[in-house]
Length: 107
Image 1: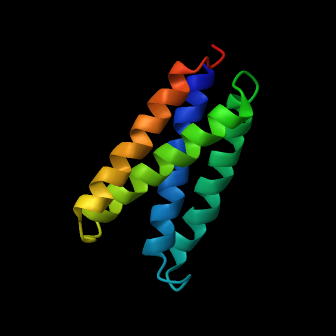
Image 2 (image 1 turned 90 degrees about the vertical axis):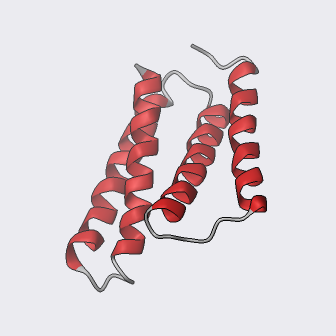
Image 3 (image 1 turned 180 degrees about the horizontal axis):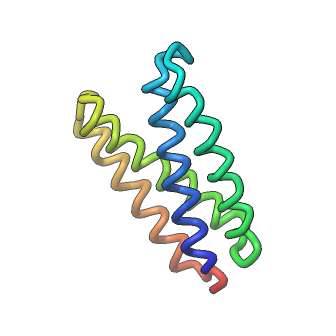
């Protein structure tokens, strides 16, 4: 169940960050409200996940996957530029997360 909580924390973190962009500097009401809703849900789910996961590993996975996914959202949804360096860097984040999972995460 803790992996589901971590996954939900990541999803809500990405949703909250996406709403930051959509809020246009807090000038649009609903995306601005959803920033706080999604981040509250994110904080709740990561707290539940930390009951059974090591904090360093859980936080690294949360931050790394959140960063990678928000970069993909930026590229696909917001039409941000793609470069070889950006793609390689995203692959390195994913590889690092895989390495953490192989390093003895508590299950």
